[in-house]
Amino acid sequence: MIIVLLGAPGSGKGTVAKLFTEVVNIEHISTGDIFREEIENGTEIGKKLEKTMVRGSLVPDEIVIEAIEQRLKRPSAQNGVVLDGFPRTTKQAEYLKEMLSKQGKKIDMAIQLKISDEDIIDRTIERRICSNKKCGAIYNLKYNKPRQEGICDKCGSSLIRREDDNIETIQRRIKTYHTRSEPVIKYFENEGLLYNVDLKAEDKVTKNDIKRWIKEIKN
Ligand code: AMP
Image (cartoon, rainbow, N blue to C red; front, side):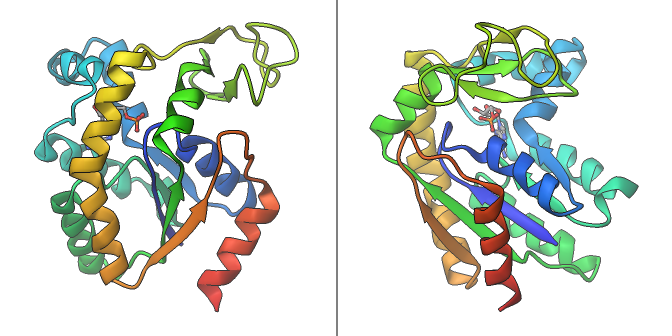
């Protein structure tokens, strides 16, 4: 099963992707996580990307495509994937289709998490993530608080704020989303793969929602 998650920053793609992996045996691939890891590890690519990401701009297509190609080749990705944060440009979307078709595969569904710009700001400003990469749990200090302040419920590690979750960067990321990524929604609509989910800042997607969406694919 190949699922694409579409939606502005803070729309909940990371949380929904994790739920998918709990409901079906597929791998979560987040291009944002891949790049953050490169930055943390101080790799050559990481050094190049840091400024772009902190600014809230998009990483060049060539680098994204190379990164995703590597990940999709891994044995752990062969049962299926949920793509979080990719594709973000029409070029990336076209590339993905072509690459999958060479392997006799295709995208099953592109799920758009629709949320207003105001609610995105509300969510991202209050977002905290687990500092333990293997856990990666995501919280919101308003809508999805950890039981103990600053501590992850799942693994006990400390919670941190993403460097790009500040108001200036968020506003720039929203703008980038409207100009560069909205055409991707049109692209998937034309491909007949788009499935829309309307959300408010306080809404929580559940495993039952995921099961319902999967049924839609099978129908
Ligand atoms: P995310 O964690 O998905 O919000 O991504 C964080 C940042 O990583 C984005 O603001 C971009 O700078 C970069 N990024 C992640 N995925 C992509 C992509 N598919 N294309 C271009 N840049 C990306």
